[in-house]
Amino acid sequence: MAQDVLVFCEQRDGVFRTIALENLAAGRSISAETGGQCVALSAGTGGGADEGLLASHGAEKVLTVEDEKLARYSPELLLQVLDAAVKEVDPAVVIFGATAMGKDLAPRLTAKLGVSIAPDCTGLDWDDGKLVAARPIYAGKATIKFRMNSEPAIVSVRPKAFAAGEPAEGASAETSSLSVSLDTATVKYDLKEVLKSGGATVDLTEADIIVSGGRGMKAAENFKLVEDLADALGGVVGASRAVVDADWRPHSEQVGQTGKVVSPTLYVACGISGAIQHVAGMRSSKTIVAINKDAEAPIFNLADYGIVGDTLEVLPAMTEKIRVMRAGE
Amino acid sequence: MKIAVFVKRVPDTESIIKIKENRQGIEKADLSFVMNPYDEYALEEALRIREKAGEGEVVVISLGPEEVKETIKSALAMGADRAIHALVPESPEDPVVTAQGLKAATEGESFDLLLFGKQATDTDNGQTGTIVAELMGLPSAAVVIDVSVDGDVVTVHREIEGGEEVVTLPLPAVLTAQKGLNEPRYASLKGIMAAKKKTVDQKEISLTDSSREVVSVEYPPTRPEGRIVGEGVEAVDELLKLLREEAKLL
Image (cartoon, each protein chain N blue to C red):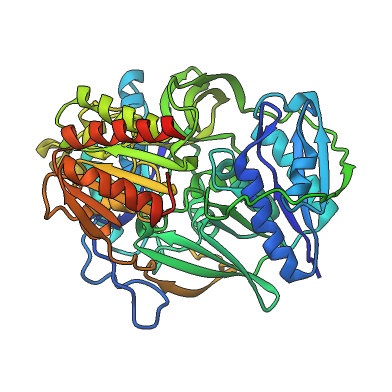
């Protein structure tokens, strides 16, 4: 009976992304229950990817595939790699991150293997020989748990649902290279170019601190105050749907049901009323602070701490005090 | 050019969700339903491609019970040419089952482009379009914010963390639409009237079994009650103190 957990370790430009380490933590928590091994799959061009990092975050075995053809993102070539890895490892579970890459690769593998998938999971358990996956539905208004009966069971895990954890000192993993003869004849997805959006280097879904602004900021220019506070806190800027629809901020900053779902350690909601659809996107934040002029705003029902006041006054005051605090450290 | 647009009937995003007593699903009786918002972007894009080409056919396809005819009608009113209703007793929870059902619904048709919304706002899987593509042996790009068809190649901009990928795919291809792809039109009165005369082909599809079993449906954990620290600028010191000492941040 399959017992190993195969973890696809997402990398970009030869560097493993934090999600890969979170996925290894998830994988190790399951393999500890199955009695099998947590096997990391690293697929890239080989330049620079730090396999020791994978071992220190839970991988007991690392399978590497190195090929120049993997220099640019190619879901079809990666599917060939995944297929070969699954044949090699015969895992009970395959774990991806619920990222752009993971959400593209996981369903492809699911269809190819004829198995089932639980995408965007917030919890994983091993119960009576099967994986039980918990995931949000209706924009997080409910959580559904599935018993995954296919072998392997495929899951993608929401960013920050598992902590990457501290690297374990002295951990080592058995590394072996998997030889896959990549067939480019069948490749149709042609990645021509990657355009980087200026500004935030950290995606909202991966940010630890988010300072978000809504219509209560009154005008697009006032978002400078949101940016300053985000900057002082070392976080990134988020936005409500209203200000994105009004073209004050780009869609990539939208938090909410039709935007991004985030779970930072700290979420500061500035001039955001707290509509259901916005809450759906940030309700699993660890600590929520709300600043709003309206004491009756629904956001205060959700927030851990609130200030009733004018964002245009409160934000700069917060920014100033935080800067002073930081300067004094 | 023949374009398929897959649409789903989902509860309005304003809906308050009530979990069934048996914790196996949610109560759907009192909900109001709409077309999945992401599917509207897909449909709008199909209509624009047809308009730009000056020819072509937009076919909407929906998998679900009798009630989805409402959603199909809205899609026809927006401008789709005809529809296929894959009739099943209930909309599947499992994206693999849904994908297999939708693939079966396309039997006998040959599409150049197959468009989906990136995810349905009820199940929030975001996988169905890509699974359909894989089952049909077609190339796919998910979460697209820009689409441009030129002959038998489609160029898309696909949203990724921190930017966009510019990707080309040969037709036939599958795309899933992200918000921001376009501004969906409202159905005009003329469109609503015309919809009544458009063909809706009903096909009975038998669904495969899911290999996922529902264990439970629960509400999210309630957060401990928070408090209003104070008013205005005067409250900032206290807030920062609490964030530092209580929340252990800063």
